Amino acid sequence: MRNLLMKVSYDGTDYNGFQTQPGGHTIQDYLEEAIHRLSGEQLKITASGRTDAGVHARGQVFNFYTASPIPLERWCMALNTWLPEDIVVTEAMEVPEDFHSRRAAKRKTYRYTINANQFPDIFNRRYQIHHYGKLDIEAMRQGLSHLIGTHDYTTFASRKSTKPSHVRTIFDAWIETDTSMCRPGTKDQGIIHTYLTGNGFLQHMVRIIMGTLIEVGEGRRHPDDMRVILEAKNRAAAGPTAMSKGLMLWEVEYDIPSIAETPSIQTT
Amino acid sequence: MRNLLMKVSYDGTDYNGFQTQPGGHTIQDYLEEAIHRLSGEQLKITASGRTDAGVHARGQVFNFYTASPIPLERWCMALNTWLPEDIVVTEAMEVPEDFHSRRAAKRKTYRYTINANQFPDIFNRRYQIHHYGKLDIEAMRQGLSHLIGTHDYTTFASRKSTKPSHVRTIFDAWIETDTSMCRPGTKDQGIIHTYLTGNGFLQHMVRIIMGTLIEVGEGRRHPDDMRVILEAKNRAAAGPTAMSKGLMLWEVEYDIPSIAETPSIQTT
Image 1 (cartoon, rainbow over the protein chains, first blue to last red):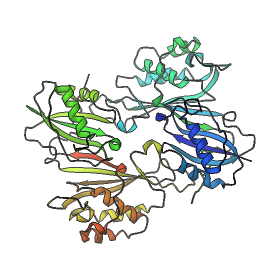
Image 2 (cartoon, rainbow over the protein chains, first blue to last red):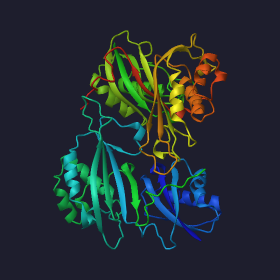
Image 3 (cartoon, rainbow over the protein chains, first blue to last red):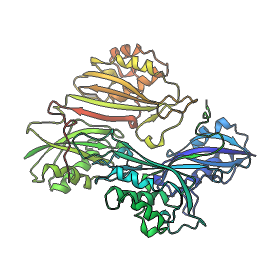
Image 4 (spheres, each protein chain N blue to C red):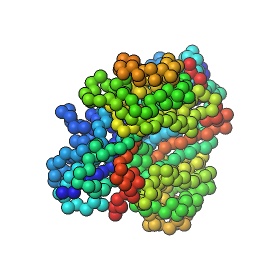
């Protein structure tokens, strides 16, 4: 049996999230079905973590054990022929027998995107929320900085979270703005990408952080309130859960030679 | 009656092209229906030209005559509330009574996009074709250069074209490549954007040019063959019609103060 690790991108718009659930139509279901069609094996994959319904991934990672003799360099292209057009496997590598995508994940990065221009960008409408009202981006940067470090993030976790501990570490959090589409003489403010890198995130954590951060940007909360809100350890202290469509699992990093840096499988 | 000119973006994936036709579900139908809901007027709009089913527009332009007292600055936001999420009106201005969006158009620019990386970019899958095989971009540039000028473009027109003359002028044509998503150590070749600017384009003209240019990129035709193909004035001399999803009406220019340069309507 080989333990194979793969990297997958998906547009989560039309799926019920990553993880298999009774209603079906999840990313995991489609990946396992594609593996089944390719290798004949009915197996379960292990991902770095779940993503909610409507959330996207640029670089989700999963692994599984296979007895199939299919050569490593064939897997990506072959799986993609069985996958729908909004799911694509982009890298494959063999990892040690005891490697586990979730337990071995050292750093995860999420990106949340807000279009703060006057009009929606229809070509990216599935991957960003539209917020035309004035946003103070410097205030958002200042608010975000209070979340970096090791904290109990109960305030920013879904009340349904069943995790025994809500302590996590956010290594870094930053905002990048893209003003290339702003039209001169208008109130266009650009596309605002917020990145959060941590050792793990609780259910809805990035979306609740973003819902609160937007209130900071709107001037409805002071940037330094973010610290008070965090320390409250109470979901009621935070803002609303921002829409899932703006969220993307950007990257998952491991201590093994990063698959992001691994020259990808060459298919011929 | 005021003559209003508007700029509209649309994702053409799910529509039967721009222009009203018996099957319905066209961009024009939705624009006229939105105007009807807003102003109560049942009118016909005039666009800079039609786009085929599946073709997109960043900057399509249309005009219409209205007796509605709705202030100019209200039109965009108000129309957008009645439009589906893949159509958005982004600019509005009043133009002289005799202005006609098609007849007054001086320059049109189309963009065609090819993803020449190993894997599809699922987040732009609706707006680009995927071509993994090796493409010689310099050969494509050389081939494209033969099309600039004033020529009879019968070779690159649909056989169904009923236009009395196939003479048009291509002012400029160029290729831009975006290699930001290329992964080191792979055969990724980047995203290839081909732009064509002319005084008008025949039915399927850009797509047939692109289908032929891809054959040049693949090494199946010599770049200088483009001149011979053009001079044949025969559709059979050209390559296939490239898929509509890669095509976008990029910009339409007029001699009136360009609406592209006009500070957009400020809505409040």
